[in-house]
Picture 1 (cartoon, rainbow, N blue to C red):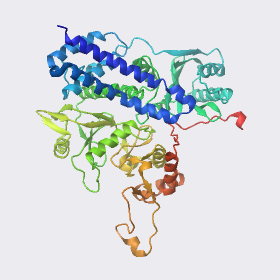
Picture 2: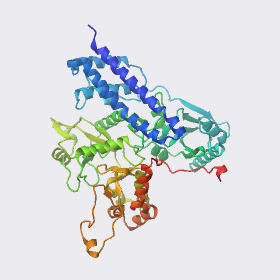
Picture 3: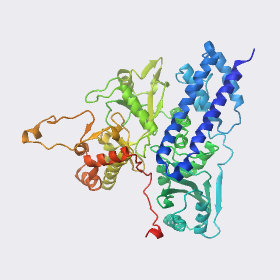
Picture 4: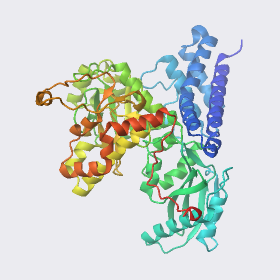
Length: 573
């Protein structure tokens, strides 16, 4: 009789190979999309690739149930399947990806709570960087005495069907930016070489050359943003500071499309550019969202093993929809949906989950947190502060339950922690407060351009990153701009109308009055004045209707992860 375990192990391994091949096939469409300025196609590819993993897991689980029949949940059989699978993939590059795929299937099949080391690969033991012994494939350019000639080689190696708009000017721009940056650092030593990851990185509107400048005893990040403009290709920005590169690879951005042979090698390279960036986020931003989740779980569990901290309520005002908690010494926040939402919330639990799924699939445009959904996590009850434990059991019982000395979270979201905007303003200097007030307005504007209306504009629903960027993170009232009805606020017919507590005019279900937004913005007079000087139009129905019209007409509006340093093209001057 044929042993079933090797057959199942082989089928799971083959399913991952099929998934990975399809993932890379979608990724390889990016250069053609960029060349053709097919931004809508790029957006469709992004969504298709995001949905690919879960689709393959679902399909493989269904196939295995059909093949195994009554033995589909035979634990002894799956222990042998796991052992066979481990031997089958030994030595493969990015083997941890394959193990994560196996675990996704076994967890789905068994509904595993916590971890089951006999039938899955435990995330805490999967270090995808531990066995990286080779470097990511790069192109290396040697400085023979002229930075201009060096960057001519770098840019000249990027091949598109689209011609350069003014290659000489782009070369001068990159050279000048590098010289200025090194001078500001006080760097007297020469750049010896430039190392560039071989595939170009794509993110809908822009292509990025990702590399580093190397000199004697110094390394500087180098990320060059390329724009395919009406007149041809040009350099749109040059990023050399770690903070600027970190924002490009942010947890609030859509995932890159870069056809990498070995992803872990690329992560090692990227960590040399942005060492403060968690490994989990680097895997995620490269499109490997499931591996990013595995890494985040591993980071959390490793941290819990090394800290006496307990879970406590997250700083900020308690949410009406979510119970939010955190570890004081760890940079993430945990969010669990409450059983019931008090007035004035009217949204349902399923709607909240759908909105988080929308954000996961949507272009986050650098203004929405990438919230990762986890299921069936288990933590010791002793790790929770008493007040938090009581609230979770009393108010989130649909998502949280006791299991002996543990809490089981059937569903939760984990995302990067930021300082709530309302708390940030309490200690910020006047200059810093004015800056975040301005970025708050820009955040709303960027969300609008990406077809997102946040719904609730209270400052407590926005966070401030370590780079001073304002990000929206409360999704229960979020909706598409194209689904809204933006109205001008009717003028009162008489003084009595103005004094009424309720509107004297009809308000439809989807009616929104942007003129009232400013009433919910708790900035002081100076901050409010700065906000209105730069962004007064976002408090008008006219602005929202114009954006809505452009979106409905099929236009894809740009939101860039950097301050553009446009190249002045000599021929257009």
